[in-house]
Length: 133
Image (cartoon, rainbow, N blue to C red; front, side):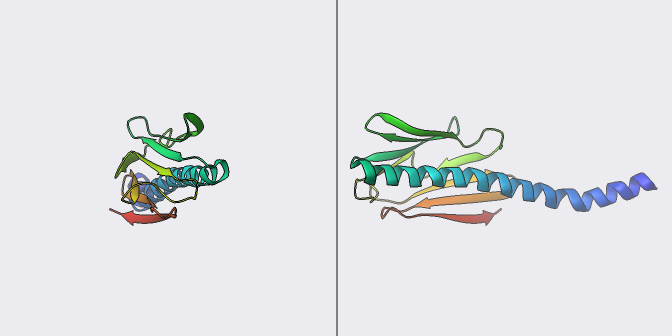
């Protein structure tokens, strides 16, 4: 009887806890990616040279690169179990802070039922959006 009651309560408590944990992991990865965009834009403006944010989806990493120098590398998936998909693999910033290219970049981080999207515009703006599956 007690085991059945524990199983019943666990059935109600564990799924919401898992969804919350999934949301926390996707949000952490998305915030790391946003930090890379902010770092790249600030570096482009400060140094007066083109700076890029490069996503390595196969290894789950994001890098900030300026003129062959790597300014920052973050592992977005380490220990998080987050899958990454992006509309393209990189975005560069001009020294005036504007993005290079004809389209915005979107990066989606998924884990379980949670998904967070980082959107980087050609104007240099970066924002975070959340969707649930």
